Length: 188
Image (cartoon, rainbow, N blue to C red):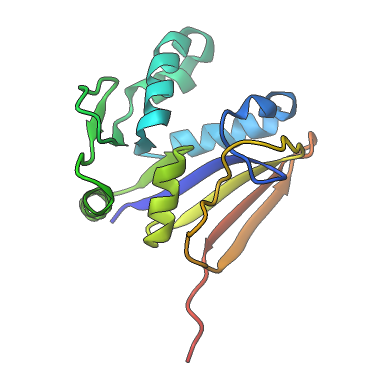
């Protein structure tokens, strides 16, 4: 069975969309962290918006990003989308019939796959998988910046869940890299 790992960029005030704010804090340590995430994964899980942004940008960046860009462009991608537009960039649609079908498609993909399915960005998909207990590991990069506006990582209405910290690192630029797993249920 595959493991689902979510890797997210987050500000101190919980914003994670359009992470242009991460640039001044992105150093060699985060580069290595992201390299290890990508090369340790077997496929990407993406929401439609993230897929569209990535699929436009990454094919143009392969020359400047070398092996990282080649890996990003060549690996399989699974996209949660209700759009009927055909997917490119080694992508397969998970389902186009709503949340329950996407969740079931991901459960099936997870059961039939090995290795790591890496989730990047993708707010709605992140919250959907988290709400259904399908994220096996959370890897957060908490950036030392407050932006005051934007989409928050955790959506309103996401059920409460306890997490256990399994690793923590601090980059010299001040980014906290925190890894969590869902906490084991309390013994009755």
